[in-house]
Image (cartoon, one colour):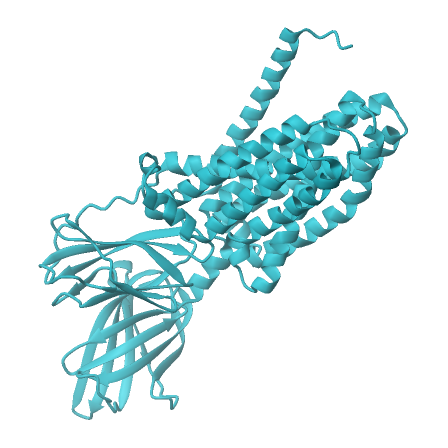
Length: 544
């Protein structure tokens, strides 16, 4: 019998809770430091019509927003110069472009087109652009501040859902397949599953709030839940709820029923994770989705077995040695598959080593890798130095192994927290896709017009392509075309390049270097005849 009094046990439990709380506080600070203060986009806006900051002679009949990947609009609003919001409900999707009808004639002054869409990975993207009719005025105020209470709630919900899936379902699988007749840790496993059953629907509502840009006080509104369910994350939640239900049933049924239910739950965790998220949305999906599935199943098997195994060893329950032997035999191939899947997914998402320090996603990955190095080191010591002695019945080694397993659980929880932080950061893969997209601008005058495309649309080496037309959109047979780029506010003199005609009806300028990002003035000099030259110009935004 353990002579420790209830008061002493309570004090020790309080200390353990305090250490866990401290770990999560430090973890949250790391996530905040690894992220920047802006609301990250997972599908990047690459072109707008009208362009941001454009001054138009008359109101456009429609607006268009082009993104780096297909999106679905959630909230589209036009804010007039007097601050009146006008909902924009008539729109069409064309590949990666959202075409929006303008419902009314606009008055003079500066307007704000505010948009919020859902990207392919299930994460919302928001922003706004300004344009003016006639002459600019003081722009109406549009708040784009980060809702930190909502963001914190989303992060907590993610961590608790991960705990329910990985520790709960994984624990149920370990009890059914590895623990023999042992039941140590069953209450913990059931509690983790119940927490997951609460966190899953709550996370769906929080997803709807984030998608609509609504505060926490709107959580009870039906439109919030319909919106959350309509995203790809809705599939993750539905599969997770079924999976958690299977795990709970496996704990209550006889072993003959518990095993297939627990196995189905293990498979369900992988399916839930593969249904949405950064990695699942990455190309090629025939590779990334199966890898996410394998990664999720591997984490569930490993993390879920830790608490039941640790408690079984601590209590020196019957079957503890057999439980340890089965887990030790299976964990090596599981960790090998887990590592291979994780490495391949990381390479697909990060792409370049510099992105590990240059992006918030990469910095969070470095934090996770540091935790994994510690975890793998600890697991290796347990597997190859302690397990054999523990299986032989060495009581002190079993106690040491129990403490080590407890530390593993804390590290796993920290990794859950880091992974939940990825919810707010775009992977470098998505940033690279956006950076490679061209910027386009339509330059229009009475005598002539041009469609200009600069690829890629960021500072550095680029190529420019121009389609030259007459003022009424007819063909224009120009003799010469010259592209002129200038940025007076940065002290950069005009860059002049003569365009060539490759024979496809366009004019091109290759080997052009744009030294700095920002708003440039582009001028196209069109020589129509020996005595007639037309010069047209417009602003163009070059990304960093």
